[in-house]
Image (cartoon, rainbow, N blue to C red; front, top):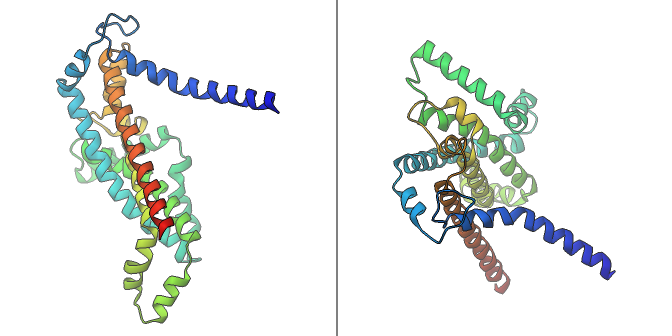
Length: 270
C-alpha cells in the first residue's frame, strides 16, 4: 500500500513539475539582465521597463481587453437567450437545426470558422460597403460568434438542473412571465451567466487563429503581437509579458477562491 502511494505521489509530482517548472523558468528569466534568454547575467527589471514603454504591446493589450469585454458581454446576452430557448421552449419547429447551429462552433475547426467569417466580411463589404476595414468590429463579432456556444451550454446546463417549482409558484401567485423571469429565473442563473462571461472573456483574450483571419492592418491583438515577436525567437520582453499575465491570472484565481471559500463559510454559519 505504501509502495502504491509512493508511486502515485511520484507521478503526481512529475505531472506538476512538467506543468509548472517551465512557467517558473519563464518568471525567473524575465528578471535576467542579458538579452539572451538562456544566459543568466544578473537580476534586473530593465525588460519590464522596456515592456511598459513599448507602444505596440500596450496598444495590442488594450485592443484585446476592449474586444474581450464587448464580445463577452454580447455573447453572454445571446448565449443566455439561446440557453433559455433550448431549455424552456420544448419541441418547436427548427429546434434540431437551431441546436446544431448553437453547438457548431464548439466542434468546428477554428481555421474553418475564421475562413468563413473572412468570406462573410468580404462579401458584406462588396454588397453593402461594410466593413470598410477589418479591425475592432470584425474581431469582436468573430469572438462573440464562437463564444455564444460556450455561454449557451453553461446556461442550459444550469437551467436543466434548476428547480422549476419556484417559477411555477410565482406564476400561481399572479406573477407575469416577465416579472418571474426578472425576479426568479435571472437571479438563479446569474452564477452560470457570470461563469459564461468569464469563459468568453478568457477565450477572447487567448484567441489567435480566428483573429488572424478577421484582423487587418493596425488591428493587432496581444496574441498576434506575441506570435509576431516569437517567430524570430523568444525575447526577454516576452518573458516579462508572460510573467505579468501569469501573476494576473494567479491573483484572479486566488481572489475567486477566497470569495468562494468565504461565501461557503457564510452560508454554513447561516
